[in-house]
Length: 199
Image (cartoon, rainbow, N blue to C red; front, top):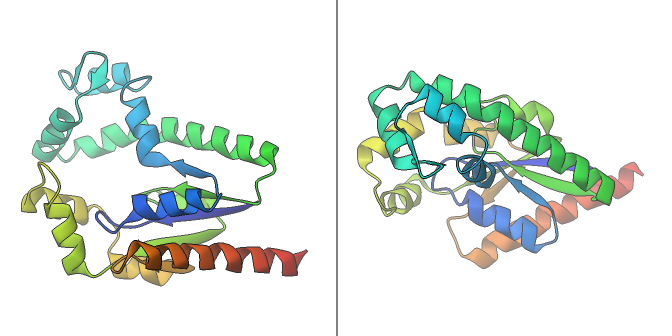
């Protein structure tokens, strides 16, 4: 089974690309969705203990947590120490289920693929990218996003040029959704071809 690591900086269109893989029948494990789930489940008491007052109604208040982290960036290490092991365990179970189901390839959608060393757990890397101007427009159009917040997020991510250089495949999302879909289908076809050759 081929494990594709899908990554890309904020606003590059990673979530859309993940949906295109799923649409083509490739099982996707979405780390962001897993974190979302953990923030209304098993991570809640752990986050509350480390950052008192950042949870309410049995959920992590993501806005309050990011406000707290913006004021004290050293907190990122603490939150990662809580969340990353839980995300890894969910990913392990996903891989196990897909192996049992006989999937020939899967996508592990991991925003901080290079930053957390997750690139060592995948066979191929697909990086989602677009023109920096398009990225900026997309991100700043999000509710509650500011220039300062955008720059803080970027400063914690591996630069796009470096990601592209380390990728096996680059998906350019600067054009239409159909263009992105075509690129995703090409990647799947290429990997299946190579798999056949190896057999």
